[in-house]
Length: 132
Image 1 (tube, rainbow, N blue to C red):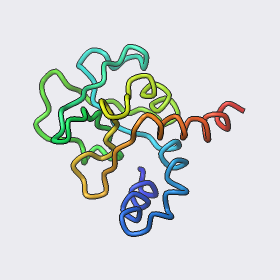
Image 2 (image 1 turned 45 degrees about the horizontal axis):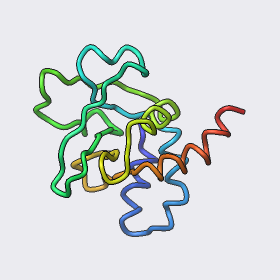
Image 3 (image 1 turned 90 degrees about the vertical axis):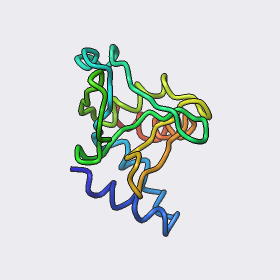
Image 4 (image 1 turned 180 degrees about the vertical axis):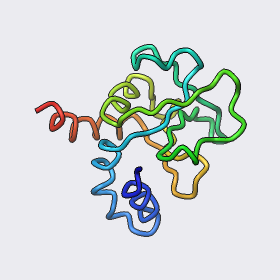
């Protein structure tokens, strides 16, 4: 589904210049997000699940592939598929740099974390193109 994005994330570790295409691929991809059971019917009502990390920043995980979803989810969690255009707009209201950040493919070797400034930059760069 998101093969190009996953390849870019893998390449990013060895070649930071691929970051040039990262935002566009993030913006145009779809992601599985973890939400509280019963809140996934509407994007505005979704309660996204987060967890503590060892560096003290809460992480809100999203996944490029269903197979990457964390195992042993609570019975209170479900995953929903959301396109990037809608997801990043919604998460820009939830994410706060240094307190709660998005973990793309958390637990995977190619996983990265996105802070609020990154989301705002992505929305500024590609959000306007999407509304034209």
